[in-house]
Amino acid sequence: PLNDQASNLLTTERVPLAFRLPRLLAPSQLNPTLIIALLLLGAAYIALFRTVRGYEWRLSGLNRQFARYGGIHTGAYIVFPMLVSGALHGLAGGLFVYGTHYATLVGFTAGLGWNGIAVALIAKRHPLGVIPAAAAFAYLESGARIAMLHTDFTFELGTIIRAVIFLFVTASVLPKLGISTRIRSSIRLLFRGGSA
Image (cartoon, rainbow, N blue to C red):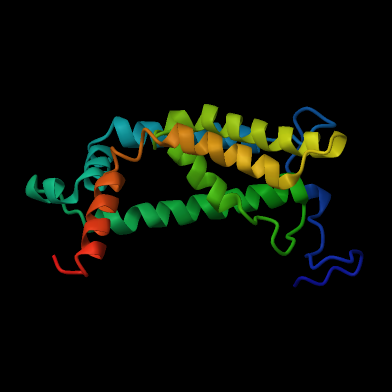
């Protein structure tokens, strides 16, 4: 399928005009994907913070043992989030193809999954926090690209700046996740020779 004769890249044939998402503010690439994403964020907020299932889901993610003690079947809340995540990733890929690129290129989503994890951590795992976090992340990334075009600013320097900002913003989240405690206990085990 990745053999478009009109392109020298490994890509599919372009999506016919009838199936492409319309542009909202031409000549920009803004399309209904933004509206769909905002609606999905609102639906995620309602599902997580305004329903019993959402409460059980959050509690299972925060403390599985406590949730199990409270009578919540935590096994269902391990598989279901992965199914939802996979469905949303598939939808995002489809919207990306039908709204922006109009074709599937090899590696066109390189790094987007990691960007999504970074945005989720900056948003402190809250659906409504994703909006400013994603906007800030996109601003930094596009600013770095523009700086590369017009100055001696390098791609690596832009990546380092984003990484430092990411570390400072997420540093407050790490103790809440228990990561610092786990790191300390792992170091203790390492120096004890693996004995508990």
